[in-house]
Image (tube, rainbow, N blue to C red; front, side, top):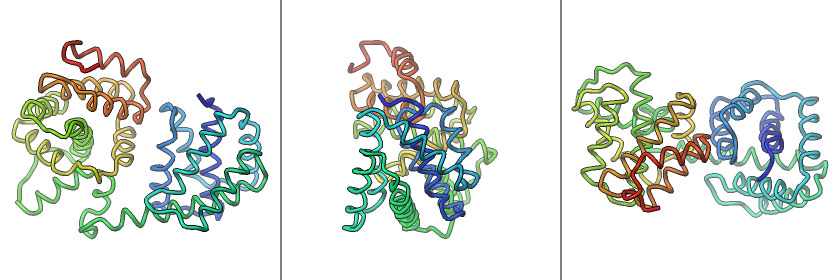
Length: 307
């Protein structure tokens, strides 16, 4: 496994590349956070250290220092492999790779192998293209004029706002709290959809979890669950959803939430392999440890788990 110093340095060099022209827009910042949030192995504290670099310009001197650190950190074949895999992911972010980008990506891989001084300029080129494609993909969403920011940040909240607008229904829930429970509802729906079948037991477990964790009335919880199950599908922006949930919760809340997800998975009598693996993915993306995942998994009796 790549060491923590290398992972953090790689992330900071990517941020420095985004700041190379001295300006990053709010939209680019959000897209950059989405891309960097996919770096494997980061803890919550390490992610915060990357955010510190994202939210203020990185000047030439600091950029050079980071590049020197990256060259030093590229000590092992595993580190280089991780860097190359992530550069490939950047190159294909929300769009096909052009022939020009293919040439640049291959050159970058070669320079990563040798930690060449030419790496930074090519990295900035690919990163700029990746951010532009991600913004373009998000802006192709339907009805973007109304609640657009909610559409790309919190799909369930967007769905609820749209239904309130259309039906004239009111929810007596403060907006910040509603946004948080909508994020939770979206992740619950992700688990319920994992085995491609939504049972009544799973739906009831989601309603019960929202009632218990967010003190909702039964009809309010059922409304949020119905919207979550409708809105969360294969096209959902998974990293934006999990990143928003991560930033609005603390580690204890996220750890306890895993038990809620396992309860939903087992609500129809058995937590399937697909559901368990979906929860594992969510746990990893929320920067929770393997130990925390196993602890939550053991909250479900062995006879009700596929593995």
